[in-house]
Amino acid sequence: MVRRTNSIADLRASHLLLS
Image (cartoon, rainbow, N blue to C red; front, side):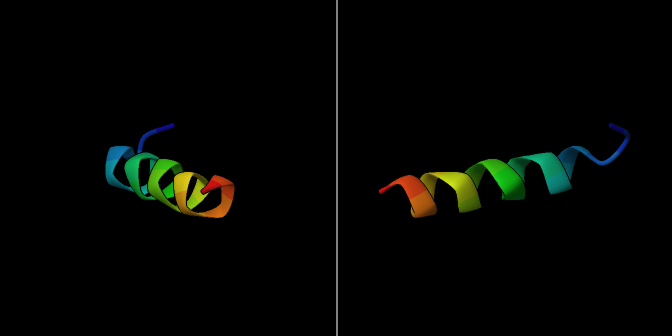
């Protein structure tokens, strides 16, 4: 996982989906 920003964006998207 070289893209950190992508990882953060993924976490945010996951949070939105879970919410």
